[in-house]
Image 1 (cartoon, helix red, strand yellow):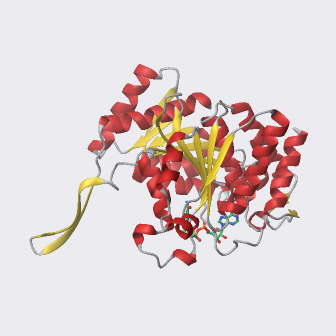
Image 2: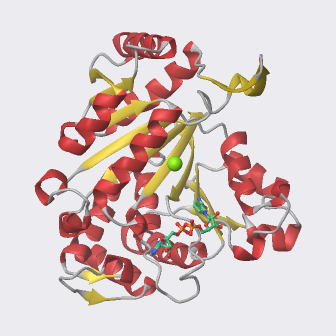
Image 3: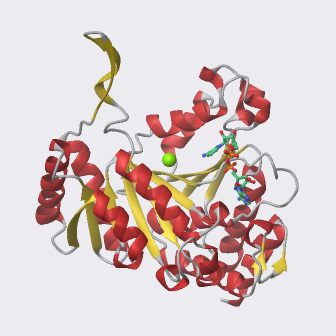
Length: 366
Ligand code: NAI
Ligand code: MG
């Protein structure tokens, strides 16, 4: 059977950037003989408009069955006043929760042509290509007890950092699997110097490594030192694995190494399915961008690179993923620019579909 892909384009610029990915899927079919069973459905405000819910049960069921889900973006001003239970974001939260996507991959990749967009010096970021793996479903954002309580004559706010051995082990495995598809190198970050959960984190990651992934190079770093090293010399890293809280901070910081929001892909992975590949949802980091929606201004590269991640991590098509990433790199090197990428040095201005066409032309030439 062909690999299966569920496309949930969503709201705002979601369908606009997804249209370019669909062209690329068509290119792989026509020119490379690689065919996906693509189905499409609604999520977010678009689903609410039709079904009165941001994710219909039948869509949820489809998402559980396919090899990978590719999502555009959800939300928009039209839905801001809706009750929380039917807000567009709830559709995405339900997908993440019911698919149990505990491993969030956030690449920070800096194409040479965009190195001057970074907040850091060109030589520090040019050619950077790292992935932060953030644990997404446990830790201090979920641990009990939590709440604001009264203690004596004052209030106390409490959150609990809590990780079980199996929660640490499964995200560690996800990072080691990723490393084997990349450069065989993982750095695990916690604060084992001051946190019990950090001590356990370090021990379990080391145990999983020694038993199951001794071929991967593993190092450990305190997360505060890691933050410093990420800004000082990020190219020393390849895969970083860390908990929910530290991953939230480190991945946002790493995103700024690379420049525009319109360039950042992501993946969220769950447990392995019957075919051995993890449950997976791929999506650009950006939202529905209502300020530019409907104007052909959106940069489709974040969504295109999210599809490249799907090729690599869900479909075992690393060479095709490389081909697609190289095509994006070439287009950028040629100076092709959507508005968000237009810097002082200028470039060839293109619309959303113009960028998609340029990537296809580069694929043709590859
Ligand atoms: P946003 O990411 O939609 O936009 C932030 C800024 O970046 C805007 O100025 C926008 O024009 C620009 N931008 C974003 N993506 C771009 C692209 N591909 N090309 C060029 N420019 C781009 O975040 P914002 O404005 O905070 O949220 C807008 C809506 O999106 C809200 O309803 C929010 O809840 C939702 N949202 C959804 C997310 C998701 O679906 N995963 C994530 C973040 C926000
Ligand atoms: Mg954040």
